[in-house]
Length: 121
Image (cartoon, rainbow, N blue to C red; front, top):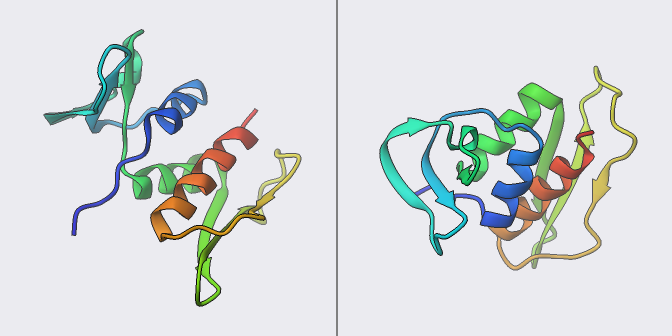
């Protein structure tokens, strides 16, 4: 099973929020698709570059670095997402719970990742 990488809009937001992990995928402003590189690198260090991590890597970074939990669950027909502050941290003003329901787990997770990034000041 191949892990899902984040969308370019999410990658741009992650760069704004100082995402700093090495990634195998990068996207540059002029590229239409992410590019795979054998060696992982922090592509966000380049002005025109963006690191494109997997959804699970970004989810872990949000949890470990910013203490934000992104959880996806199913109501038997569709997927929903919630973003919560972990109990030991209170720097964020609000949380996020989707009013929308998503067709796939990955769509719900992507939305949760975006919303969690927006909570970072």
